[in-house]
Image 1 (cartoon, helix red, strand yellow):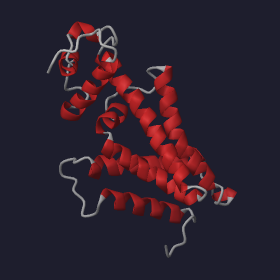
Image 2 (tube, one colour; image 1 turned 90 degrees about the vertical axis):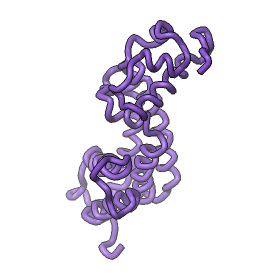
Image 3 (cartoon, helix red, strand yellow; image 1 turned 45 degrees about the horizontal axis):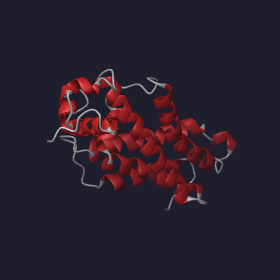
Image 4 (cartoon, one colour; image 1 turned 90 degrees about the horizontal axis):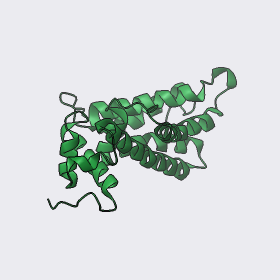
Length: 205
């Protein structure tokens, strides 16, 4: 690879892209800053002009991931409207689609050990992303009688947990966890069972 040199204008993003590539290849703890520098075509010393350590670099990758995630979730939510049910189901599918399309970002966000409290910017990005699912849950929950209505945060957390479980077990090639059904079908039917239990889908659908 040709050395770009640390004076070029987009070194910070080049390092993030290198980080994402290495995460996909080796996991979030399987590479060093020197390797990220080499992948980006710069000297190790240049990295420290932008990041204090590997954790900071991964945190930036996670921050960018949450921004992409929020946009995808928001797009899915709006595409499903005005049907509250369609909007809610679409956000669940968007979670799976994001994990498939952006595996490096996904790992940086959810499997790297980086806390969303690390910086105010990271916390804000994560809160915005998951807020879309909570908004969809709150809108849909208005169709449930008040005395049987779970809090929207619980409602959305259940779907988040289900989506995350399907991704981890069946959509990312985890060894020993093959399913005879596509991950999309597992998630859709799982959400259907959950929503039927809340009375939001007729039993025969």
